[in-house]
Length: 88
Image (cartoon, helix red, strand yellow):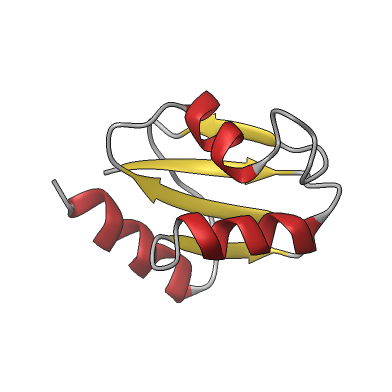
């Protein structure tokens, strides 16, 4: 699966609603206005469209496709990333 990062959301409650509706078991919150989303066969624009970011109905945010990851975070985030990236 591809993992996407949604960053700097202006209306986090709207993004959470859209994530819950479109990716109920494939997102992980990493901060109050940032999430990771795992999806197969989608682009960053597709994710933005599905979450209402492109049209602005869910406010503004930035969607990135991840090519790698590294850093310091709680264990649950690393576990989620490992599980989602391993799914082919």
